[in-house]
Amino acid sequence: MVRITAVTSCLLAFAITVYAADAPKGWLMVRDGAANTNANYANEDSDINGRLTGVSVLCKNIADTPVTVNALIATDATRVWGAARNVGGVTTVVNLGGKVVIDPQTNNPNHCVINGLTLSQIKGIWH
Image (tube, rainbow, N blue to C red; front, side):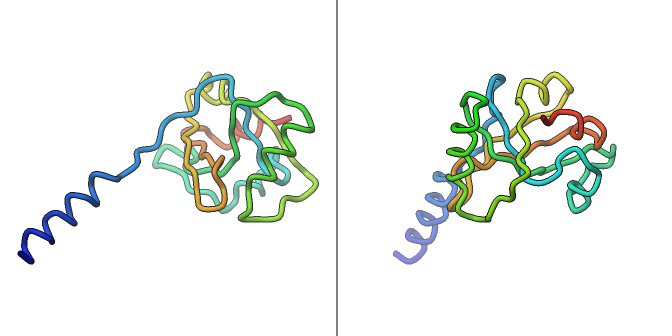
């Protein structure tokens, strides 16, 4: 009986694994701070080719307006956002060869990560 329970528990753990999906083109991304500077990415990881990985952003299918951007930021209960807020598009990231992966977190349901862009590329996507 104990063995069956252990195997069942193990199988259930694998059954509920959630796989991340790519954010589709057309979605808006928001990043805090001076996103067009080297310093904003000083603590980010990069792969062996020098492309950034796991760059934290918020993303969602919303219009680029102050009201919708502020509403998106309000969904992030994990941090206090500063006054400098930068927006960019998933389409731009994809067109440059990168990916934006939907990565919801506890208290941050619209968290995403950018992978695959160089530092110079990512600094140029924000406005």
